Amino acid sequence: MKGKETKKKIDMSIPEERAEIIDWLKKLKFQKKLFGGVDERTVWKKMLELDGLYAKALEAQKNRYDAILEIYKKEGRKQDL
Image (cartoon, rainbow, N blue to C red):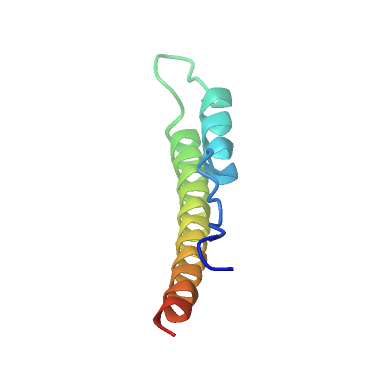
């Protein structure tokens, strides 16, 4: 039927990967040294873990955008017909 268009609803909630990063940061603790500060190796290890979480989140974001673009490309072709 013309006039009735079904639009796909896009989920705009916080992505699972971002929530995972937020939870990780809330639980983040460093090993303390005997005389001030924190253990440098622990800091580097945590930074590498965080980098991995961000890489995972970026990949998931790219996949979501690619899927959305594909939907719009298909819908655009249908409208051109």
